[in-house]
Image (cartoon, rainbow over all chains, first blue to last red; front, side):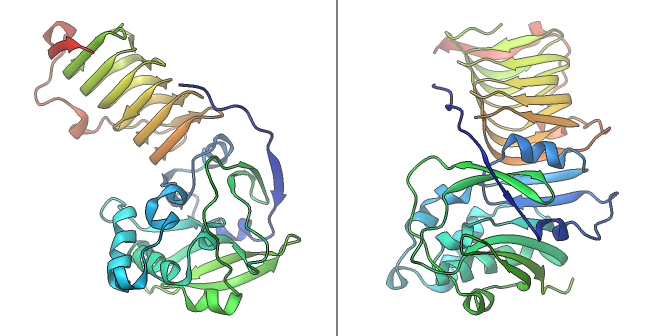
Length: 203
Length: 130
């Protein structure tokens, strides 16, 4: 085995990320789902919390990289395939979902199927944080993010080959969600949107 | 130490620090001691120790009563339960992490072997060439 070569991290500020944690009871055990990889800085950040962190690294899943065609797979079958990837322990209710750049690697049908599969794990107070692509002309970054502070991330280049990407204008993005809705959005300097999502689930 | 030429299938219960550089399938419990899965270690097992350091690969759940460290060469697929978890740059992890400052995790009953064994010489293992 060869060790991963150290890469230089860059940083990115966030206006909305601190809102993800606003109002949470510090005595409550925080349950967090991150679609990417665990990075040291993020663990340092969460070490201040009583928490359960789920890291699934969905970017490398075949279902994401090579989504099945409509004629090969119905919408409900696609949802079931995403549900198979999201095998959280029974009774799991996610407080925070970290979906940085992930929607930009899902076409609209897959985005709907993914959020429909995620919905059973949401509760009324769930929040999600997204970095999304508005315009397909520019590829989204292919990065692994880490949390430095509640208003700043660091990021490293993600290993492997970047998959296909899809832009989701904000209105279309909102219509593609199940169980989540856009609460606030901020246009970033690189043309992406930083989005805070709230739950529409009532339980 | 379990060297790189050793392949164990079974439950290991120990009362001393343990380094694994071989292959283990089953469970490993050294509750009050340190467990190091060396760079050549390949573990498919639930493990429990006071301090767990992963430099090789493990597929299974890790309970660290004090701390779990995944080194830069480490690769974990499973769940980690410890008051403190440290991931070094380059470490690979996929699964869940349960952590809480000041909390001492209780070893999962499911990680324990079928019968309680207090001595390492009671290890029920089958050895074969790796």
